[in-house]
Amino acid sequence: MTTNRTPLIAGNWKMNGASAESLALARAIAGGATGGCELLVCPPAVLIPPVVAALGGSNVAVGGQDCHFAESGAHTGDIAAVMLADAGCSHVILGHSERRADHGEGDELVRAKTEAAHAAGLVAIVCVGETLAERDSGDTLARISAQIEGSLPAAVSAANTVIAYEPVWAIGTGRTASPGDVAEVHTHIRGDIEQRFGAGVAAGIRILYGGSMKPSNAAELLAIDGVDGGLIGGASLKAEDFLAIARSCP
Image (cartoon, rainbow, N blue to C red; front, side):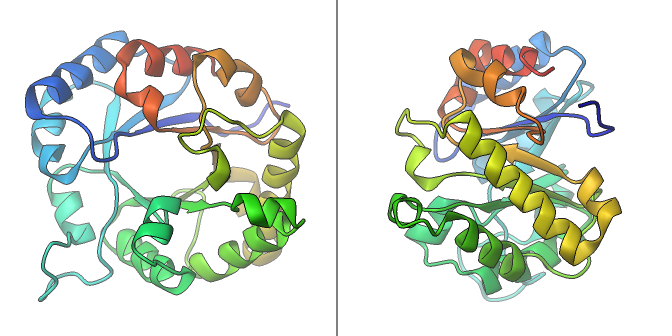
């Protein structure tokens, strides 16, 4: 089904890369980028300024991997959303499953960070997803609904927010949800968005799939109705793989 939602392929580099290799990766992605979808790379925080400089003049955007909910203050080791914006970022990933699991981030904190991102003019990529235990117990949709309700503030719009569905059990494992599973969850998320924010927001907001998307399965996943791109982990660290995924956008 044709929509007015431009696909977004976002690369989450996680805690990977030194300056030389990261700049080479950024330049290779910029050099091979084509139209048809938006491209975004999210390097480690220390690499954001040089990557922004390397991508200057290209159509590849840069984002952060997290931000604090406060604009400034005594928060050692944290980065404010306004700092990301000042460094040249347009997006920030929030509520990633690794942040939720490794740092104990709950929905209330993700909501506060999302509000901070919006206030700084950043597009918040808010992640939701279920664990293997939750899927096996039949709690997937209830878990997703709870995260949508708890993590999204009232000011969400299609312009300032992207949702990324990342089944936790499929991140970095090589496993992917079946097309039917992905379609069910994406449809459910859009229904939750419509119920809370209205039909207009639901029709315009982009929902990405974020569970081990790679060149070999990208076309199948991106062809699923309601999938508006991908949040790419491991495959975003190789320019040829990331660009192959981008070329798979319908």
